[in-house]
Length: 309
Image (tube, rainbow, N blue to C red; front, side):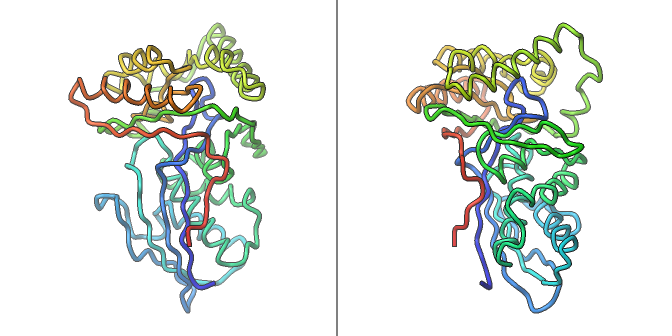
């Protein structure tokens, strides 16, 4: 194999109550990479599209190539590659844009080399892409982008990650408003300490979310989609957030919250038809405030990255 084209999906992290420990993959949007072997050991980004010229071509500083460099060094592989990165989602969207790039790149190189590593073992390399993109090697986006499904990060030291089954009729609506929220800023405003009362309530919702997903108990999922710690702080960065959330719930959503650091907002629904109604309600609310947005409706993507050709 001399070349390969790979897609890696967008993701929703935190999932309301699960700050830094929950994340799941969606069908769209996502990023695509094309990787071609070179006759030397250089890693070269030859083309980037969809980024409005914002991303660097320096392989040591781009989230798509940093994981590849770490992967090749760790495995003692001296093989060069040319890469094209095609961004199919906005930067700073709260949908794991850098994670999709990181996963797509290292997954593609592993495939083109005949899979010397298991997919799950690519996770630490993918996390290095997050480190270069936002200063923290967190896994709540890269893990579901790489492994698919709904993922729980139980521990970072040691790294302990597992999938949780999701109900077949669970659909997600994602609305991305045309505003910008910097991930580093969204982390900076968070409080360093939280009350015992809110901690206990949050722990109850985390447990309820896991049980609701595993038992296909949609009412329990709905009751558990309450974030006492992160959402109240970050909501101030997203104009019309509370109005959009209210519109989603009135349209039949199980719950609604901020996707990752924002500005994207997501909602869970039972059934695709309800999820599409929720999308219309959320989109209309943003647009009434003169905020253009894009909406996506998807099941939970169980596959993660895939080879396109």
